Image 1 (cartoon, one colour):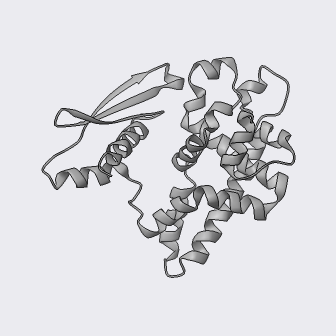
Image 2 (cartoon, helix red, strand yellow):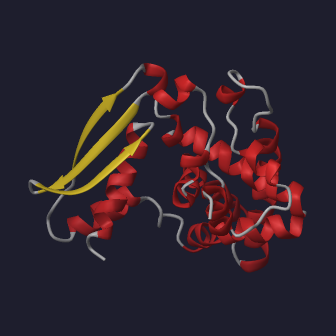
Length: 223
């Protein structure tokens, strides 16, 4: 089984036209060095598929939740952070076609590139199989996040959750942040320790993202 076939199985959709998926996985930096089409138009389409799928899901499943809270749940569910998290879980970064410069600067791990490619993939599913299939695929990937945000909006704020958990024992987390790379491709690493013991490590394109991922890793040690 090829890497692309394995990805389709994880995604939950086998493409009739695999060329659509290949376009969805093509960053503009690749097209600047090779002939072809980048994924930006599919990203535009996938953004709409994601938003409508999540909005319909929240509206139907939570009739007693007011509009303002539904809007917040949707915003968090379709955020760049959520998109990048889902993309990372699918191993999407390993399949994105990048130009040499973007590849060298760690583009396959950048939150923005992962999020854009994830939207493009959803757009590709829509073009390949229509909205019903694309909506089902989308909710298979993002439905749990939407449910978490509708029921408990703070559930995905890992830093706050960790701080509250540690405070019960009179402890507090300490974050050590290190950055590397040029300004346009800066990567940050957060090491989280408690009482001198390292509990979590996280990386991201911003300090906030790195800290959240470190806090998430630390919380998993308590499970």
